[in-house]
Length: 130
Image (tube, rainbow, N blue to C red):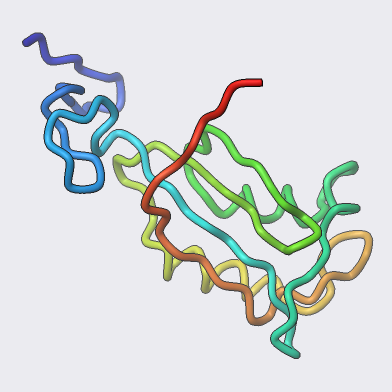
């Protein structure tokens, strides 16, 4: 099998990587998944649906904490943000969680409290058709 070398000096062999314990999975360690939950100081998930339509709002602030974002999606009413990044040199979930919490209690145009937000490693993703 041909090894693909990327400009970042990492190399990977796609089909020989392991994804979620399954040998032969196609994406292997080249992707990393995170689940971010925006939680305020009262331990309540925050509705962030109005925080994605202007500069420096919550979505932009969250995504800025990850290096090499490939994709993200959100169920903003539940405070959930799903992030996929390049898995090579991706930050630990705990590091991103600390950074997001440090953004504070008044983030974005709607002053969202992010002080108890959580970031955990995702274990899978689902793609569905129409």
